[in-house]
Image (cartoon, rainbow over all chains, first blue to last red; front, top):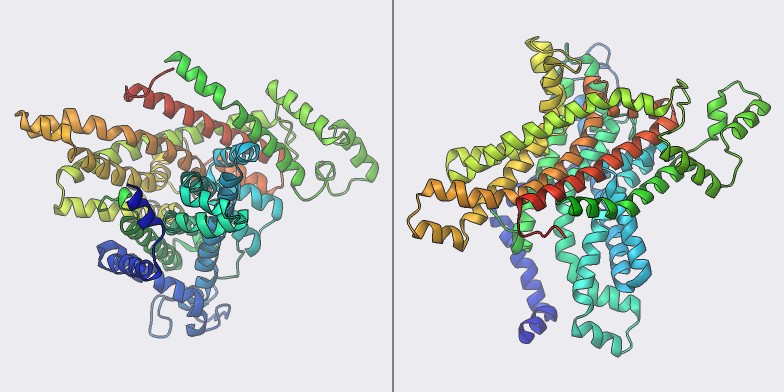
Length: 297
Length: 306
């Protein structure tokens, strides 16, 4: 038992690299995980470079070509102002995917640091900060984000912060649990005895142990965060039209649903596929990195 | 049983206090002066001062918080800036539609979700199993507001069989319920399937089979009962999820519930209503969690009541 612990907690660098490579190969061999990896990479690339591929400026109206269907000229049709839907989707990826991914990472980072700190210091501050987590978790996710935006007003920065607030308490709890489970291990005591500073113990010795579960959770949460961010924009609380954010586009399309449903189908399908990609990736990563949660689904 | 319920309820007191504190400071953190907002655009500074005194907004924050809690304990949440109606009355009027919508949605999600999950697990590896798995993940990934729009397009615009706007009637609730329930349905189906498959592979199931019980009896009597215990937890989580999901769905369908009122009050900057709604949503969520814990202890005899 002791031998097993030492060998798994102090990996030499080559075996660490092999572990990572193995995990990635396993992910690619995982049926739905590989689909998720391809889909989510596609959408991340779209967020980074989609704007450069847009055939038209996303805000360019063409009143002689409003509410058009798919054609060679407009691959995905046009909206009620004659704006090219494909261009709007390509440019909008930056907002929709960008906000979702950044918010989910931000929530994970702040939440994990919070949990790491709380679990490490323990005592009164730990109890107090976990009570705060309880209170934050008592608000159904979207509500907290809506409340935040009510204070800050709509916009892209408030949206990112509100959407990251959505995941933060969950990561705080996760990271605290992981911290507590390794805090009493002998090698942490050893580090303390050798005079390592608290930040060094936290970041060098405890943090690496929670990377895997946090990573699995980040990818699982990114899909939901995308849904929340686009949902807030759909409600008019996030990114505002005419910015081509997909949720905002979907909201604008409602008025034209009877005459031009394509205007709703295009951004709606884009959000669905992106969320699907991140969900499949998350499931795949969970199966690969965390065998205890396995269950081929 | 009773003691356990009481204990769980008592345990929520710190959380409830925390919620009250957050909600109280929430309205103080909002941009703009509440007294000025209440007085209206064309008010004189004197009028604003009168309002400030009348609502006790000139008192120090701790005292204001004390009054807030005191009013709350008497069942008062203040008055709406816009309609001047008591907030509790406004919330009361919109409460039942949301309750109907979320109860129906959780019922559909749990009945259909558990059913599909069980069938998928029983027919593991079959085409049906694959189809259920694919539909479940699609259901989880489709934004409820997009699904709502698709349903409106198909059933209201195209075929004209159901109304576009939601209301508290069988026809008016059908589309909003489906749109709200689908994501949870997918989650419940997936979870039921994997939970059942896990139980099936355990020793006591093998023993039951080995002693000669029919496969169906083993599955129905032994496996299913144990597999559904964790599903209850997921259902509780999903119910909270549905509560906040209703905010979006009610907006899509113009459904006169709490979520619709919430969005209205944000757009009108009607902060007392917003504050009251946040409190109600959070308290509801806490109570559901207690309910799930109690239910859990009823189903699973391994959890002690004490």
